[in-house]
Amino acid sequence: MSDLLSYAAEDHPGPGAAAAQHLSASLAKLAAADAATRDRAERAFSDTLRIALNQLASLLQPQDITRASLPPQLVRDWVAPDGHALVQISPKVPKGVDPNDDTMLRRFAKTVKAAEPGTTGGPISILHSADTIISAFLHAALWSIISITILLWVTLRRFGDVLRTLVPLLVSGVVTLELCVVLGMPLNFANIIALPLMLGVGVAFKVYFVMAWRAGQTGLLHSSLTHAVLFSAATTATAFGSLWLSHHPGTSSMGKLLALALTCTLIGAVVFQPVLMGKPRVKRAKNQSQGINE
Image 1 (spheres, helix red, strand yellow):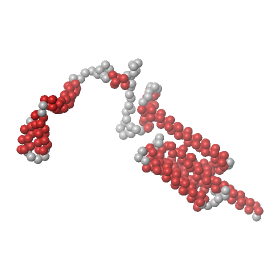
Image 2: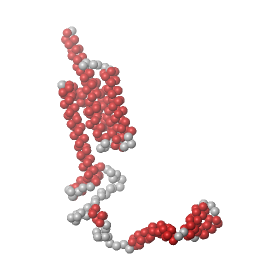
Image 3: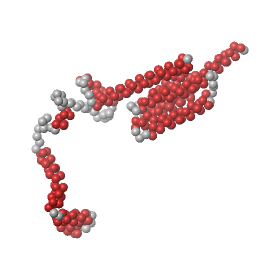
Image 4: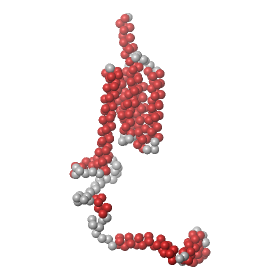
């Protein structure tokens, strides 16, 4: 074999000739080696072939598969010690339908639960986890609004002023959700945390403007208060918006939604709230008293 490879390399020079010469020299060395070396080489070359041939022979002689013929580890994964067997169910996905569609997943889980209430598994766990997380954040948002309303009442002592603070905040939240739909930014389990945070961060801007309005300050858009609010919002947006640069999809979407929510909150405080408040109460009272004196 070694000589044949060497002759072939000499008669047909070109691609592969050097490899053939190297293989010929290696086979010549193996032929001149001792018996132990040749045995090791034979095992290295033939063991994998023997395994493949044995597997092929087994495939050509199939037998009935029973629980007794299966490996015990596999049987334990599917059959409990008391005899109960694990049944795995998968939905039939129609053509053109996304298999990850939430509506189809929820319908499949409800159908299976109706047939067997004790069913568990991935789809059911995912749905229950999603419902738990969404419910928790809805409760967090509700308690945030209630807490903010109580603190505003303690601070402002006027129901109208509390509404002047809360309404722009809630409008900013609604606009944020609408822009999420327009911009194709769906809510997920990571970025939904931005909504309760937006309430806590955004209410501060509204309080500043209401307090200035109660003190009789006019021209809020070009006042030093607006400049301070803009710089404060820019600092906060930079801190939260930096999450947008994260490689993690959930963290990145959180930073994106926080930046959008803060922008909407700032626009609501600077543009919408002064229009909602109108003329300062102190200035109106002063003008009315001057009219009576005249």
